[in-house]
Each structure stands twice: as C-alpha cells, then as structure tokens.
Image 1 (tube, rainbow, N blue to C red):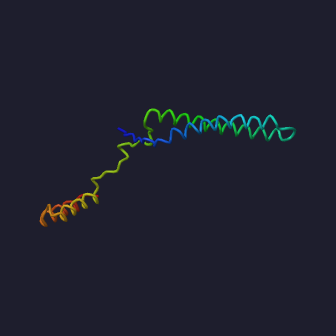
Image 2: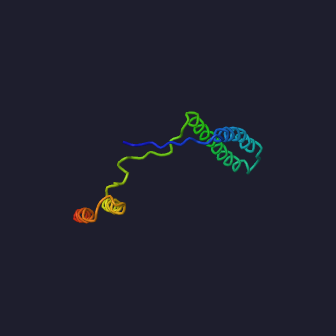
Image 3: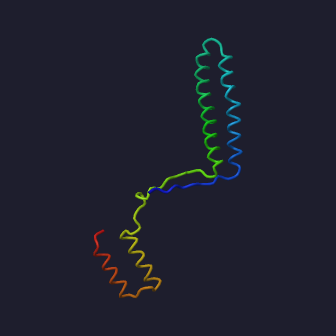
Length: 125
C-alpha cells in the first residue's frame, strides 16, 4: 500500500502560472517571425533556432497549464511513499535505545534493564 504526499501551493502560484502561459504565448510568434525575416544562409540557422524556440515556448505553456489545472484541484501530489520501502523501526539498535530511554526515565529498574538487554544481545542481528 502506498501513501501519497500532497502540498497546497501558496496563493501567488496561480498568478505566476498564468503569467508564464501568457508570456510563453506572446513569445511563440516572436521566434517564428525571426525565421520569416531570415535571408540566405542564415535561413537554415534561423529555422533551427525557431524549432528550439517553438519547442521551448510550447513546453513552458503546457507545463504551466498542467500545474495550473492541478492547482485548481486544490493540492499537488509531490511524492508517493511505498510502505515496503520504509525501514523497520524494530531494529536492534532502535530497540536498545528504547530500552535505555526507559531506564533513563526510571520506568524500569536496573534488574529489568539488565535482563532485557541480555535478551536483546542474544538475538541475532
């Protein structure tokens, strides 16, 4: 069973994402216009530039739109934790620390502490 971790972004995030979509939408024709204005040998390089420009602007727009739609749902999933991946807390060292904490808090006496400590040390670790 896996557990999902969500965050609720701060208020300005929505405004920032809308601004990214508007700016990338406005910059998209700019790269195409540079290609149209290029002459001669520069046309090949301008075409290559325009391709990179269009892909960049489009990816910024699509990513911002995706995050904006997730933001409208109210929370964004940032991680997924598998329960199998969580390390065991009942390991030898942690059990020994717990036992020493019980002794330090005077919840068990010296005899109980020594008996349980010897029992823990006999276990295979």
